[in-house]
Length: 619
Ligand code: AMP
Image (cartoon, rainbow, N blue to C red; front, side, top):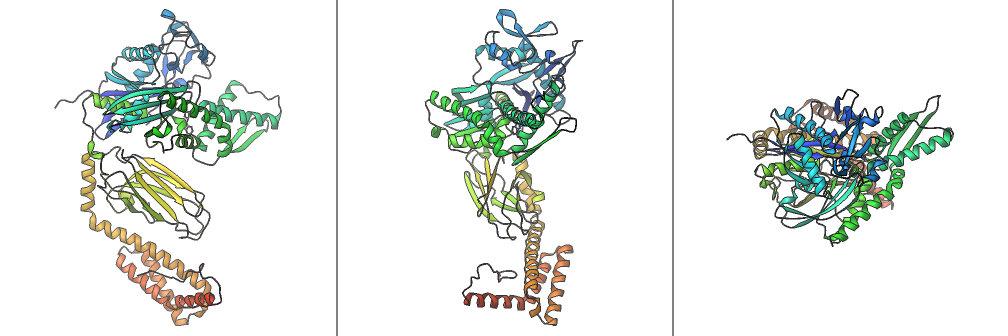
């Protein structure tokens, strides 16, 4: 069969653009040689007319603001009067072009937004051509759902100028829903909340039998992550003036540096509770400050509330209530902010989809649409069962399966785990997929950390890990420490990147290695248990070593030593198990002594609850 030419899916964004294509294993973004997939939607012209695009162009923005064009999407298909409000925010010259259309005057030459966007599109096209080794001539391009006919038409023209046949213009929220496979829903209402760097929009969609309909859209084209950066910049500059004098001024280069600091701090606060800022103002003046997540959230709360207001309006325009929304999808880099996620979840009363990178989800969906247009069959086997087992890495590197392969979905499973070290305050949760017994032989789907566990003896915390795989095959993993209530969660797409062949290979491998894997898993279990037994013996010796006779002590030491040696060197679980049992037997007098102690304490009316008379295994 002759290979079909690839259709490129393109997310042509206000700040960043990127391309993706459909592969057998699903949609995949196109990266350049450095692995970078986002192309900043920035075009710079030098005095000789040389054009640079993307990251290189962005670097020009500070030194040559008049000849560096960004946010061109705001001008697409608009007249000069339409964009009056935007003009104050754009440093380059926006002028009236043919029929009053908004154009850009760069170094004396008037250029239409279509022409400028075509430069970005061509960059994406050539990256794809380089990555795939073929000429790309056809594309699907996404636009916001609120784009009118003129804006859509201009986007199509930009594609044509780049030498692309634009097979379809797709709404960005529709693309996001396609990336999550929601076109397979028979009848569902979906809210897509898209908060980027400079724009916010929310769309309410209805999907039925693969056909999407936009019920309403709402938003604010001047609200996004830049506002959050500005809040931090205001906080920092205010404090700098307070500390070092009101007369301090901030030149363009300093302001740019401050913006970078603020954005970095903001991004850090999506992961951590605090972010340290250190700014050297020269002359020995150094501003340092630890900004907490709480402080940051307080400062951006009103912006987030504003987005919720738009969501309520979109719902009311669609004549729906929040509870009638079946699925919520998050798009745009700023939806990584925990407060944003919480706010959206609260409003819609359901956990939003976050499993797919919010910066890439639209491009990936454009690639899915391209795949549909190319007549590719969707893999339907992923719909009703989990094709491979899902679990987490347990102590010692074993795969602890929570959901077995071929389980019907939706499905939920919970297991309780604990810590292995005294005073441990955080645990890493590695989410695995596969049939093998060792974590290293499985596929790592994602990971997260549960932090802030109060220090307790090893084994005391009760950490409940819950897997919930929903009807769309999206997996939510959450972990909660019961005493402190500390919780963390992550969402992943287990089916992403899997083909039928891959599933077959994984299953076959697991059969081939079954015996070796089982031994390896048992060895991990026995090692863990030996570790626990030795720890208990150490504790008991510290309390009551003097009750042992010399002979008993000698025997116990020898037995313990043998377990230690075998734990390091041996890979026969049965031998280690026997040694562990011998050590346990040799510790018998200690165990019995401790038992008696516990009993006598109980008789004296004291609680024995805190004492653990157990040493060793329960058989
Ligand atoms: P987009 O326009 O969708 O590419 O989103 C870009 C915006 O997302 C910028 O304001 C970024 O600073 C912001 N952003 C990216 N990653 C994070 C993060 N981890 N936490 C908070 N904001 C982020």
